[in-house]
Image (cartoon, rainbow, N blue to C red; front, side, top):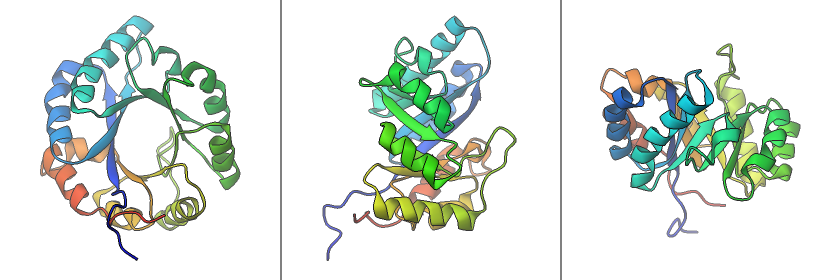
Length: 213
């Protein structure tokens, strides 16, 4: 069996909560240039709807010119007006409720899936991908061993792509070996001592070989 022609894993960036997209632009552009980025998950600081849309549009201009997808964390109701490619919704109930706002034209990503049943329900409902391992609102997340098991299970049985959320640079390599399609880089990349470009480049080098399904 050969890996020739098999897809490679790609990176998925998670931003901090953005209030000023202008000051964030330099770091974002450096990150996008440093590795093979499939998508950026934009987390927005609280604001009124018009401000949220304007912030998202400013970030979209940076991201989409590199042919990278921009997803909004929550806020499916403004995805179209903000020019985003879709939204990432945490929790199976909120995900299902958001689907009419996103489908069929935009990406619907599912996260905050606390059980295998929730993950399968998200897939059956129309998720374009599922993410495992992202911290909840209190910063809690499953142990690494449990996360690896969940990713390996999904990657082996389902065609819908899965994303493993790396909350530390040391998690990139073990999560990539599960067969996950994408590795999400958490907020740590934006404050990495080697700089965001160095952090993204190092993560890219730690990705596994092409994925065989």
